[in-house]
Amino acid sequence: MTDYNFAYLDEQTKRMIRRAILKGLAIPGYQVPFASREMPMPYGWGTGGVQVSAATLTPDDTLKVIDQGADDTTNAVSIRKFFERTAGVATTEETSKASVIQTRHRIPEEDLTEDQILVYQVPIPEPLRFLEPSEVETRKMHSLEDYGLMHVKLYEDISRHGQIATSYAYPVKVEDRYVMDPSPIPKFDNPKLEMAAIQLFGAGREQRIYAIPPYTQVVSLDFEDYPFEASKADAACDLCAATDSYLDEVITDDAGGRMFVCSDTDYCRSRRAAGHVGALGTAFDEDAA
Amino acid sequence: MTTAIEIPSAVTPLLRVTDLNKFYGTRIGCADVSFDLYPGEVMGIVGESGSGKSTLLNCLAGHLAPDAGQVLFDTRAEGMRDTVTMSEPERRMLGRTDWAFVHQHARDGLRMNVSAGGNVGERLMAVGARHYGNIREVAVDWLGRVEINEDRVDDRPTAFSGGMQQRLQIARNLVTGPRLVFMDEPTGGLDVSVQARLLDLLRGLVREMGLSAIIVTHDLAVVRLLADRLMVMKDGHVVETGLTDQVLDDPQHAYTQLLVSSVLQV
Image (cartoon, rainbow over all chains, first blue to last red; front, side):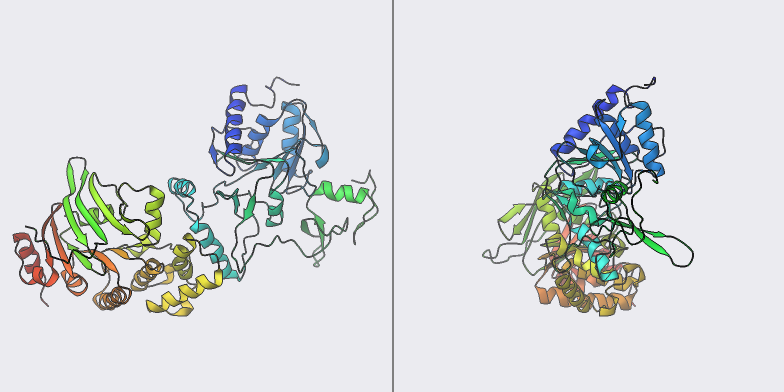
């Protein structure tokens, strides 16, 4: 341990954040304002998620951090190291072994359990923001359940692109009340928002926390004649042959070469360890990675 | 002076305003305004800038909270209700179903970064329409009614002329079949030939849909053409009311006489 207070933030700040989290859980989908602190990282790098994680972690927790599904990208590595140093908690890359998972823009492929907490980093918590610039007005719209405007956005999508082209940060209605931005997760992940784990959303710059309690109804907005569809690349993972996971397209050379790989690195690794081999993959070797 | 107009008492008014007052600090916005508006009737409110006509209109439409007085509206479900003491959700619901508000500047009443079809469809979606095909069909139909070509349905209002924007605003407001339309200088800022076509269109729609309307304007020609009844305001007070032709042809109050005689003769 170092001279930092456990998990960097002082106890009063964590208490304040926990109150916001509890309020958020009590009113699913409602954006609770909180006094966001300066963190030793720039806005846009997950300051909201980090503060929520800091208030959630206990010394016994095991933390996993992912960025776009991957454990080994800059954002994930730096936040994981941050908590290793300031909280001294155990960390893992295995989804099933983690008790707290901080994520940027993905939900892990593996089903989460009641013992887990998923913390999202949220850039813009207000789903109505690009339609209605005034915060005073959007708050009023939420309180009055005045959500016609949200469908105007989907209407515009269809009229311009022939389908609902919104592919990430797809708006949802929580427990038939609040319209919520699920953070920029691909809409492939939207059905997974109804899960056993607690989901907490933190927006540092915008100073908002919101939450979805376990087993809460979360419905993606759509039209009767243009129903919601969870889409992904029409391919299998080239490393582990998974057909049910969200895929990243990776350009491999300048001659049009490309491959599809699972965006969830832990999911892909565990499948390869179990003997699955994709079209471009080789047999799994523990030391190779 | 105020002359009440006798109307058979069997008809209930659509809107009944009693002793409406609005103050800005110690300054008068509008004071002691009372009138009844009956179904299918179009009332004009005229007066110079600062006479309180826009204040009055905003109080009636629920955009401003009056300091005293009642605004009773004959709601479909519950009969006469005071919209001043109504809850905000109820008032908003009225605002997107039975009421319509046409702003002087189309930009205030339209979403400039949303297509024409989306603008018309917004009120439908706000009251629960969730079928894209149907919404679009209605939107196209309404664009046709206000003389906007079907192939402009996916264009944004920023690509429209001033007159088209104003017509789009009218379509967007009338799509849910309101019973009462508030208009604030609907022809202001448009050139005369465009004004004439817009007035013609409005007159047709008002007659065809049996709308009641309250039109605020300083243009006496507009009320002459559209309004059945006229209310003249000065310094926040109503100084004269009556049938439009009667007031314009035989003005009684000194201010109305001034107003009528100030119209430029071409």
